[in-house]
Image (cartoon, rainbow, N blue to C red; front, side, top):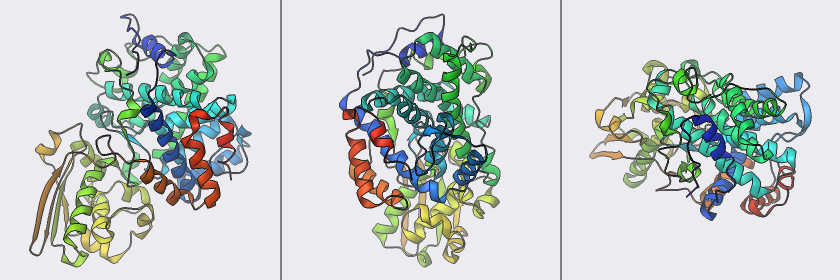
Length: 462
């Protein structure tokens, strides 16, 4: 367990800064392994996104047009970038496939904004791998604790995207820890974050590119906030708990005690899940059960008569409404947030893979979607924060019904190194030859032994 800093009544923000910079907190070997797994998982997604994400390609074009050259590595690209722009592009691509890690209770993706900022700053400093891992662990703690304190159902209902709004604080904490900053500086940087913490769920209306972009902005702004504070720009005090601070401005009924006072000290990266499917996490439990039924019952698409699925209310808002659009996804983002599409893909092909989103026009998909209903169910909502699902399948003489309380990849059903390495190779093969991929895996698995992170980042360019 981490050593929790004493929480002064005067300032939750200062206490959070102190906790993030606490050099007395020792990470267990298991926690460090989780941090390494997070890095590998994100790098694989970034490599594939570099070649196949429309958002990443557009961001890259914009940065090139701006002449944003520098010395920092953007994963999969040749020319280097200014640190804040490398962080933006990396975090954007970490999140672009919606294949990055998730945290159940905070309902956010902590890795993309935190590692996006931390990897860039570690390379800039020539920091050791051990120092990078500690910074990542601290950044996850900050992003997640703020995500929890914001009350995810309320934060979501107000239209915010917590991976961006809480993520920028996590990225800033990781950057400050790498630089060896003091708590006064980080508290000021948190105040600067308050002026730029942003992220809206409006992307879900029409499949816009802003979902990964705003996570990229979180990493970019994390680097920028820390640099501005170091240069003497003073942010407001009490950025978290103040009258116009994060918790009051971005939520209703938020309790600042949930930031640290009610924390059990277990590092939040140890509660973070890795995703087996590149789509909204709220759909994964349903996909798991559908895949199991298809496999165990040897079902073919033509045999399916009816499928009924229920998700938590937040999942329904993201993945089931508006029904007409979710039944007819026009873009990859649409399909990644459609329970109808991902259920049909699972019934047709046994799983949901990144390449399946390019097969949206397959005739069997439209036929299956017509037999699928997605409905609300109080029994599923009662299981929140668990990302549960209810699934019913009728196929001739086959009648299956089950509730899954949580998807595969959560800490109680983890993806281990073999699955994560297989996932990495499957994603990164488009950009890296086998020898290079194996070298990257080896470097990340021994990251705590690296004297200089640039040994790794040298392998991550074009």
